[in-house]
Image 1 (spheres, rainbow, N blue to C red):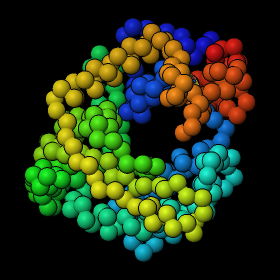
Image 2: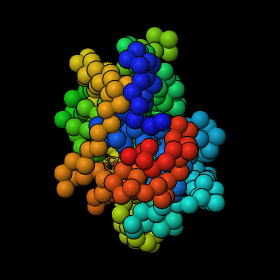
Image 3: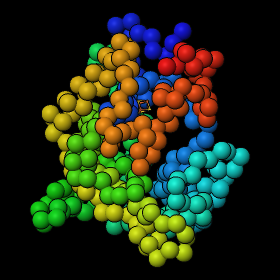
Length: 312
Ligand code: SF4
């Protein structure tokens, strides 16, 4: 038994945008992820992102008022971390994370009002048949209709009242690059899903998409002046062309083919940008993949009961 066994050539492969992003980094990492090999400790950044998403969703769905969103975020973060082994970031304490998240949450209602969008779907789950036995599962944070026009930096009108837009709420240590917003596959899959479902939803095909990013500054104490830079960034609005969509679908099929063929090669890349261990982080599977140890990992699902020899 191995997690690296081949699958029949016509087997159905279910995949998600985050698995596609992992496949772009390292296929071996994708193998561990799909086999549900998990780190024992939950990263604080993951908990933070989950709680912020929860607070934003609660506000948009009307469960949380604008006066309580920050406080409820902090309560949620406390609840989520209790009884869990949490791996902290190099510099930020829980108190710093609470201060950053609380600030982002209290700013969110005004930021959202300013976007000029009316929600159609909040956390909408899709299952999309891409053909060739490949199915993509995705959850789109926000699909909405514009209540006022959108203009680009040069003053050119990009979209009008009534046009459909797709937004992904993100927390980020730095603003995303223009190419990431314009070409990242995640938004392209969302674009395709909304295009296919727009008639049923009673909206126009998507006109713009973008990431709404809450910036997490690199601060060490909650009293730091730089806490002020914990703020929501303006959305860098972009679109997708038909060829963007074709490329993204094609890539999902390439990944599915590699999964069926068990092509899970390790991809340490180059010394200065290795995903295995770098200044910005260490791969969750570094221990099993490179050091030959299962310490700090839990084996669940298909990997439960496997030995080290079966995982390398
Ligand atoms: S340690 Fe490196 S090669 Fe191994 S799974 Fe992680 S990124 Fe891939």
